[in-house]
Figure 1 (cartoon, each protein chain N blue to C red):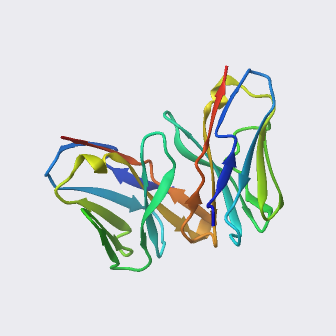
Figure 2 (figure 1 turned 120 degrees about the horizontal axis):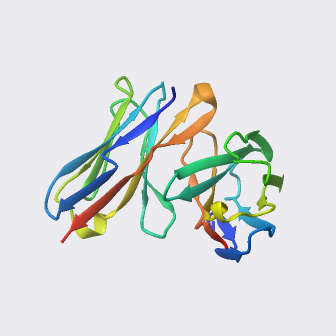
Amino acid sequence: ELKVEQNPLFLSMQEGKNYTIYCNYSTTSDRLYWYRQDPGKSLESLFVLLSNGAVKQEGRLMASLDTKARLSTLHITAAVHDLSATYFCAVPIYNFNKFYFGSGTKLNVKP
Amino acid sequence: DAGVIQSPRHEVTEMGQEVTLRCKPISGHDYLFWYRQTMMRGLELLIYFNNNVPIDDSGMPEDRFSAKMPNASFSTLKIQPSEPRDSAVYFCASSLALNYEQYFGPGTRLTVT
C-alpha cells in the first residue's frame, strides 16, 4: 500500500527546545518537498530536497532526505512561537503518476 | 507573476445549489491540481490536469463533482447539487511538472448550509 506517513501528527513544545518531525514514504522517489501551512492560510513551500543526502536549512529549520531509507526529517532548533503551524511533506511517486502529501504535523510552540 | 488565483475566496450556499469554484494557474505551468481540505480528512487530491487534460480524477468523491480546464489559464470545479458535507477549503495548485514543486492558491472556503 502506498503511504506517506508523518510523525508525530501533533507536537506541542516549549520555546527554546529542539525537536524532529519525520516523514516516511513507502515507495521509491528521488525528491521530497516540505510545506508550511499557517492557520486559515494556504500551503507555502519550505524546502525542496532533490537528491539523496540533500540538506537544506532556513533559520531554525533544517530538512534532510535519505532516499534509500525513504525518510526525510525536519529538525527544529530552539523553537520560537512563530514556528507554530502545520508542516506537510510531499513526495512525487512516479509509478503511480501522483504527488502524495503526508497527513501533516501540527506544531504548537508555547511561549 | 501573481501566483495561483482562486475565486471566490468565500462561498456560502444552501444545500442543493450549484457551486462553481475558479482557478487561474501560474502562467507556463503545465499541471493543475484541485485539493480539498477538512479537519476530518485532511488534504485530499481531487483531480489533476496536464496540459488541460484530466489525468487522474480518482479522488473526486462522487458524480456531483466535476472539473474542467478549457484552456491553460483557467479551470473550474463544480459541485451540483451541493451538500453540507461538501463544506471545506478547496485549494488549486499548479506546477511545471508532476514531480516539481506545487504552488498553491489562497483557497476557497465553501460553506453549505
